[in-house]
Image 1 (spheres, rainbow, N blue to C red):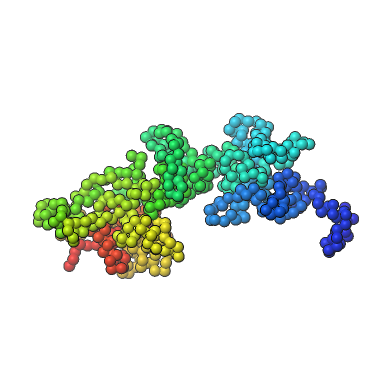
Image 2 (cartoon, rainbow, N blue to C red):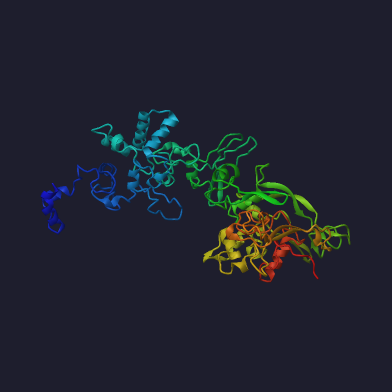
Length: 604
């Protein structure tokens, strides 16, 4: 056939007008080849599921043109890695919708333990499991999922099967619908399900299934990354349910009853909350660790995965797609670490941390005649000056409440008695985390209005503010980073050092009974690599830690999480945190005085 028309074909290729026969075959598919244009899609698939694209003035798919393979006719592709661009591997193109009948997700076909399981087979298996269907019934259900999407789908399926009632099942079963963004009508777009289609994830719902499948309506209830709330007890109180938008919470009225029972964080919940079903912590705020210490020695140091996506919603009431739910510039992981009270099922604890300040002239409370109000205690006028008395107060850090960033529960700020009476300047939870007292940065709102920039952009988020203050990633970071825990070399004084000095009299310094709790110039025995050098600073690139690092560093980044909001004197040197920070700020050189480094009270 080809030889007889070769001369006519060559003449047309060289610019001559096509003759009548060439005119005819230019508009024909080849009845002897299933894929005339060789683009990987059967002619019938392209024919039955095409439509005229008015904007592009072309057919959405064409069995005679191979340039349509990367088109996405129904526009259901999804930005899987959330980088702002849908790349070729994320595009649920016409070709990928066709390949669903052969590979499932072509790029993840190697996750199937043996053989090949396409999306259609997987969906039919789900129907058999969920409803006890036979294979024939499951196949019929898959067919009905295509038919029942609307009148266009009904008409198309009727035409496909006009001359053979099994035409669709035999030649097209398992394809995703390139004319509809939700092939199985489960409320999740096909492209999202294609994005996160991995076979055999560890959860019981997905061990024998594609974790997400554009043809399987049952996958809305799968929890492949197992990030729900699975260890509930009868004493647990679930969080209020609702939605977050622009860091404002709107209650939904939905109630989760107390009691036992698993709460999977399903695919639909992941989609609805804009989280990823292949990550149990989409916003990367499960950053803290649970550290076990026995007799001063670390025996266990494990990442705390309790702050997973599902638990954020069900248990803690925070936003699993935002690592600063309330926008207070305190990361959720920090507020969770410091604030969560498992016994109360909330973020508040009654602690004996509030400093009682005294008039050192009288030993009593500060009043309008006080000239010096200090965080000490005194047994009457002229008595021994000891550490201050402490009162019980509620300490609250809730990732969903921005107000608590401005609380000062331990009252370790400053009483200024230079005027008529004394006025108190707070050292808030927000200021403690960043170890700052300057009024320009006194609150999250003040920071956002300050005009401070990081890498050319206005500072609006906590991570930007922290990086700007500490010089993270800059060439002079060693000079700027006043929260660095490890001693660098030589005369470096910017490192953490906490001491329990055992002294009972402010005026008498007795170093003989000092107990060092944390030291950035020493290496902890936990995961020590150079075991012969425990009295030197840790080597970061081999995984070593500062001695007692866990007291100040909650996420293993060798940086202190500021000063402690539940300890008026973080480093134990008798000087309240505000005083050391303000003293450090005033000379313009950070780190020469520090709330995280013990400094001797000796003045001579």
